[in-house]
Amino acid sequence: MESTEVLRISRLARIDLDQDEGARFADQLTKILAYFEKLQEVDTGGVSPASHPTDLVAPVRADRPDGWEAPRDLVARSDGHTDEFYRVPRVLE
Image (cartoon, rainbow, N blue to C red; front, top):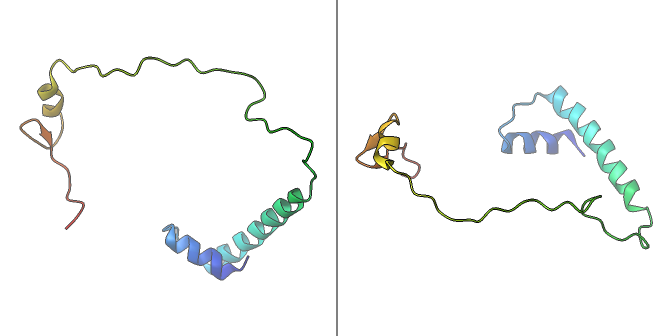
């Protein structure tokens, strides 16, 4: 992986990296990707897939709506509200 690619991805992720950091991360990511390529060489043909080492089952509760006794009181506690609605900053122009 080239440092230019790392710097491009960092800009897309809005992460500020300088040239030295870009080069260092490019070197580290190249080693990580090489290790994954090495793992691809392992023959896993006779191995059955496993999603979890034990058969744990998560408890599931009923999905039912619960009403709020005083929704206006909850909204009134917010910094910005109009009647029973929250006021939020504009997202689209």
